[in-house]
Length: 134
Image 1 (cartoon, rainbow, N blue to C red):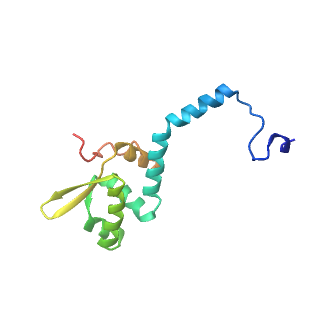
Image 2 (cartoon, rainbow, N blue to C red):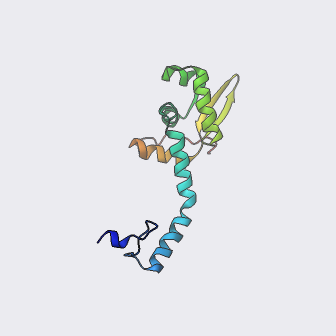
Image 3 (tube, rainbow, N blue to C red):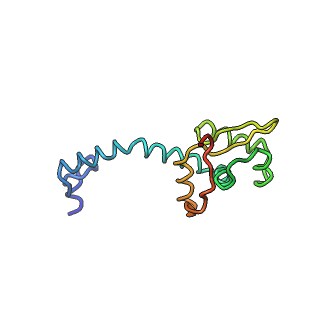
């Protein structure tokens, strides 16, 4: 019986939903496309274990420099810089220079909230300030 519902293209011949419902669901998906794209970008940013640790640390400590991140993570500052470059290219971190030191901070409040949901501590970090926010 299950085979009878599948056509030669592997698609369902029959649907529980009406054509109008399917059209509405498609429209909903199209409307949510920017949000889905952002989520995929965030997952891409966080998929590397070291990069995930970096964004976690930046979320919890507002802003950190390359040397501090390297010391905490036990990796070279060059490796940290490469990860931060990727995050900056994705427009997820910002920089601020204080004398000779460049500090990095998360810049997207939606990304910060997303990280909180992933970590299960979204309500614990009311003190986090988004870079550039007043």
